[in-house]
Image (cartoon, rainbow, N blue to C red; front, side):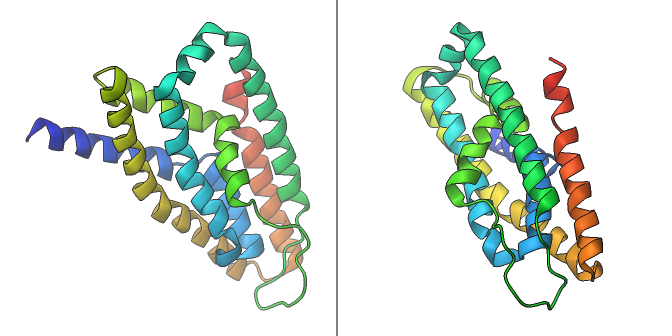
Length: 205
């Protein structure tokens, strides 16, 4: 297999596995799909798909060196991210879901495009993915590095969009099975607990 094609296939497989595996983003999408449905969750999905490529480019342009030189800054971001994720878990746990077919206001809303994109900067899994992708799939420096990372970002963008839609549909399917507000609240509590649990590996370091 041609080296370029082998690189592309490997990078795509990495993007699929990282974007598709359970984590904070997919947990929140599932909860959002169950609580608000598909269309209101589209900005959230798009924000995730765009946010990681932007992070990759920022790291390639020198942010990674800044964080390496100032580890306290990375620690501050890590703890700020933990606090924000706990707040998001609280929002999921206290959201007012409606059974399928119900009418009326749903109170709080899912994340906006900008909120979802910015969330990647405090998402521990996104940092692992971004740093791992750059370490494993770049082989050069300078402008050539930026070009490689831009291609990586494009791969993640194309791969992540259908995956985020899939996780949202999982939530919608759960909502159709859980016909009562009590059942949907229990589901959201479980999603909130999973989101908090995803913090534990990060907080142990």
